[in-house]
Image 1 (cartoon, rainbow, N blue to C red):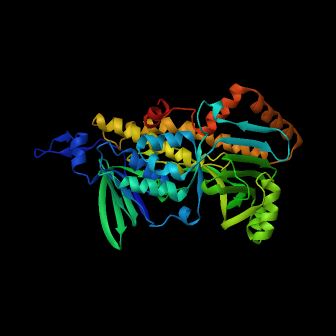
Image 2 (cartoon, rainbow, N blue to C red; image 1 turned 90 degrees about the vertical axis):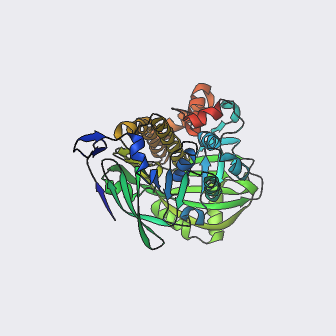
Image 3 (cartoon, rainbow, N blue to C red; image 1 turned 30 degrees about the horizontal axis):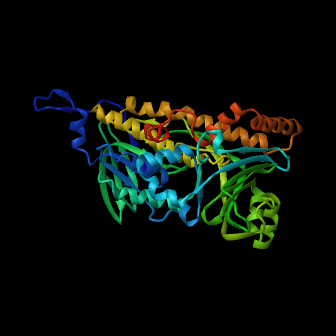
Length: 433
């Protein structure tokens, strides 16, 4: 795969007398196939496309795979309050909300220590603290909503094989159903995952590291009701999370050192459940394993910039974080809403969507907010995933403060639910209702 980049200049053309004249954004746009081309049709890419439904912009979504790997593995996510507000603002929440499970309580604890921090909806004066959703539920709801977006073209399966970032447009060469085709747009948006070929070949560097841990994930059917409680329990090897799903299913995310995680994955079902019970506790009775277990690597990554001339990165293409706290997909959903807002304002002003002065507004909005969350998850994992005595004393004192000092508890809860920082207009409208 080859990507070519060119220097940034305003869009120019020559008239018949040889004089150089400037093209307006509207004149330039009429010559293009689309205003925005999105590479990646996962949750973040589709959220971004759906958020532009009322923008009047012509959108192309380019997705290489007809089946999502996350769907095939039965992936599930914590959908925080901010993300649910964004989906509601878009108009896609109504379809998915009856298939997601509300979180009525979050319990945070350190191994077997008796102090348990309990977060409740009344701490935020809300009715719930968030939701847990199967990947397929969110993805299908967004795909169905896309059918009502007359300004969006969905190209799948289609793969970008070459991109040229010109002064006045980005040109993409695709392979679709074995045939080559070309399209042009004012802006290319990369929502193509953590290993984003778009980001790599555009030369945007990313900083980060692989953790010493991996995650084992599985669906569990407990004997007793889960009562819509989410658990995050920290152990020396890594955090252990239980997420409540519909039909009294639970999703476990068991973080452990890499070799230990491989051993856990290799256990037979009976031995796995016996070992799981030690981490899970007996609050929900006997456990039944539902489906297969999967192993995921854990890493942190942050791009040095989210934008270049005619290019913007969103979601995992721009950043990845440790799964502790369930922040990853929520950061991407917020990216999508923020970039959509920036582009709609620019379009209303007749501005060229692919120029850096426009795109840097999105960069300034999201870069530091995402970096803060990445740093928070990293510190949280390192602070709790060890047995050093001074840190044990420090974190248990911290848990006591969280449980006892209400203002600090509320700030921490707002951070987890996405309610800190600048809110997109899509979400504000729902928060103010």
